Image (cartoon, rainbow, N blue to C red; front, side, top):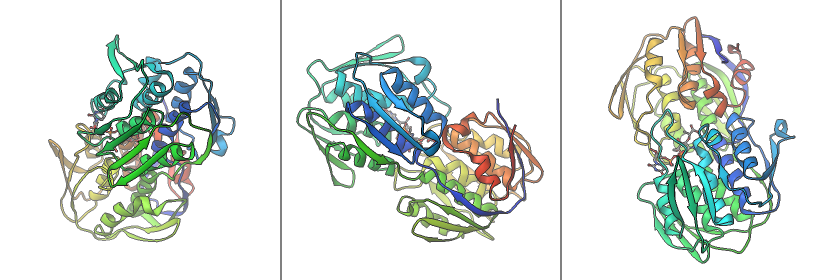
Length: 419
Ligand code: EPZ
């Protein structure tokens, strides 16, 4: 098991280049099942989760050409054979595997997908996906941990209102409805940039999708979809993670290949934290934040403050001059990084959905353990400013969502290595 060792206290100067968005790429890869023609993707991040999705799709007879993965390119082509079982040993590694369900139902009218099971940050059921797909005519039964589903008469368009906003369920229904018979209207959809990127890709494949108002979309079913080439959007969570790194210890740190329109909502909040940044169209310049006051903040669906940035922000807030309170509204158990940060000298307490972050004089390096993807990067951020050596264990969590994190940080002056 790899570990990452950091010696804190170094200023970060130079340029960090942002990779493509994992959470835009995963549903778009699943959408390859919706056509028999080539899907050529560029700006694909070279990450474990992308490799896992490639394996899931390969098991479903999608040809996935990863020979150019180191140029951040992959090509997918669905062979449309009989296979429609997404195996447990693959799905348990990544719950986003559930995203193959909608496309399989649309193309094969049946599918067997292992229930993804919980993960570190909560139960994460798939009821919103299944209840909405059932409204399009799909039938489900649970059999030995697999969701056996079928739509013998094919999927038929319907009006569906999501009881709560879900990124994954929105993506499942968008993909399934493209080939359903007739019109589907989805209300109360998620509008994260990753969902919009999926819509753009589906439209380029010939899908008839129209966003009619902020959280409503209409899909007119078509007979077939075609191949396309699509450039994945930049990763807004990676961007904001390195903005926090710059706010902690940057000296003219430059972050390039960003999409400002996807992070402007959070940059507005960062302004109230006195984060010293300037930007031009595709890059940001950040310097270490000097004095700033704590804030009260709640995680919300986009365009609110992203849950995927909650752990990273906590590290910065531990350097504030006054107390902060974060309320985590999206996941029920996303504070596992708190005990690890407290072992490094942070002063954070958790009361239900709220985390109270008191100012802490300084952080001291320690041996800590990563628990989920974003928690693990918060430990790296803490290591960058902690006194002495920090050892982060179980960095496979990190490799799921951050491309070459140690080399990107090393290139701008961090004393960091993987062992
Ligand atoms: C996506 O997960 C992202 N993953 C997550 O990023 C992100 O944290 C999350 O959206 C929220 O923004 C990918 O895009 C691959 P949801 P998803 O459905 O789709 C509950 C990362 O770090 N829910 O919007 O699973 C669910 O338990 C990952 O990259 C149901 O109850 O999120 C959660 O509490 C972590 N039933 C809430 O809704 C369902 O059927 C939001 O989940 C589905 C979800």
